[in-house]
Image 1 (cartoon, chains in turn orange, green):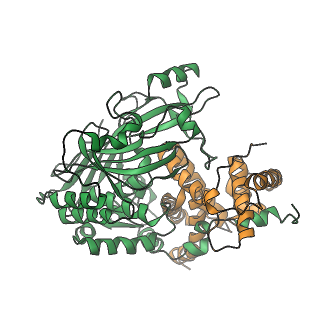
Image 2 (image 1 turned 120 degrees about the horizontal axis):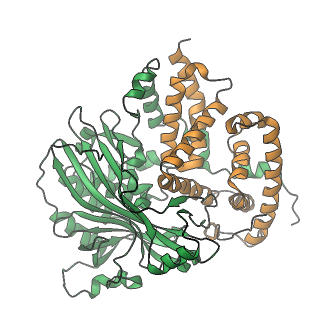
Length: 186
Length: 397
């Protein structure tokens, strides 16, 4: 197989997942740019890409995002805010009410956690990585990641309880009542 | 709670916004276009590419005006003319009470149609379409003491090369300053120990808001020159990067332009701009600053005039002190500030876009603590000049 063929396969398989990851960090528009840049790097370094490729690609996307943050903090902040806005806009209408409440509580709880905790949790829950793969994205050992995940998960559980109480699970939550609640960090 | 606790990771996974679902993101036009672009660049010549001056193979869409007003309606300026008659909450009503009856209909639609009709039709073309903007935004800093506001402002220059082989440049960070907004803010900043580096207050929904800002006064930092064309693609329309030829092909009929934008909206669904009205507003306003035909600029105003909820503000003053007529969309929530609305200020005589800005309508607690009130312009981009020329911008030394 030529490099170009391998790259096409890689692109088809991983592009949507890299874009999903980048969008969750910086919104769709800047996320598209980060994704383009990620695959440009991948093409240049085709022969260095390990198997499976996804953790490596997400690691590149993550670094590019940090580079943007250093290089242009203002643009980065606006982009990151867009991502947060998507998250804060909550589950979409048409979902079953009880589920919506639970998910909304989960998103609110997530928003109260530290950046580190959120990153660990979403790599697993949203981007579908196992501990080993997620550890590669973050550049830490699998053991370290597992410990971080365990702790982050405990904190998320506590925050969900707090958020659920604050939102009032039984109070017939409407979409308009989204995150005005702030839950103290613990 | 009587219900058994579901697995928290499962709940979180279920709560993933659909915008981050890879299945929904597969197979976009942009993805296909990027693949072709990447494969057409030689992988074996990374050195050559590096020495070409860090040229990115892609246009960073946020660096372009369409995106700059979209994603970054935030790069805009910040202070109301201080001490003027425009301060505080009186601003929104400044129009109707001014003495010069420049007759602007209260109805936003009619007023904008008037503007569109007055657009100058002369189109002197050159090699470059260039504009200079002055922009600023307000940041709220919440140290352990009282919250205060800082204003960041800077001048930017845009140059779109429209002839084959010309480059498009964006020079940002000219005369960039970040300083306390008022004397009271200065006092609070001093009380906090006069920190050079600031951390912006976290907003209600953005807990990752650890944005750092550095106090600076003009000339400390050198402007940044960015090449913004990717091949012959010079601007962004919706989710696409487009060429000058594409821009010239846009219809001057407002019905057709609306249709074009509506199609682009469908394609760009899931982008970070929420809501069709805001999206159409951003795209149409962005078009006005691009090298499009004057008819297209007029059509863009007509598209804006037809948006639901648009209202006229009568005669208002822009952040650079120029008089114009203002138009606004209904206010929406802005996590950083409270609620705010998007406004355009237009020179009614020429149809030139003077300022694209976000104005606070109701400050949240933090914003109020930092002295922001209804009527505070929390960010703006004011266009100082825009013209055709044959001379490329000189990069500052």
